[in-house]
Image 1: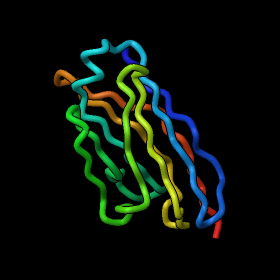
Image 2: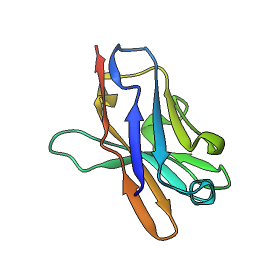
Image 3: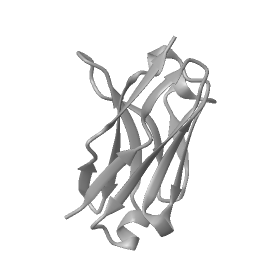
Image 4: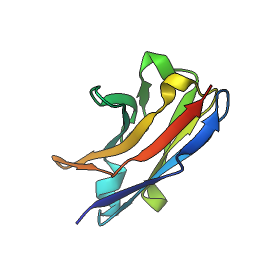
Length: 118
């Protein structure tokens, strides 16, 4: 059974930084290596939105609102994906979720809260 565990969230002042981690277990090394992995976020009353994605070939894309501030990366040896966030804004406040898509299966983590105080 594949499990995703996010960590690294917390309370930070505007302009600060955080690094989120998502560790995958129960997935094979090849399954993680080829996986398309995304960080999503959600606030109350709004749809979950894709923030950043990294493909198996390590190509990345970002939603416009975080371009230049967030960096997604992956360590396939550790089955872990990261989201490094700098210059945080109050509008970045949300629950952040990790999503892994591999071999036609999709997995979600439980989420980690990021709160940016202005």
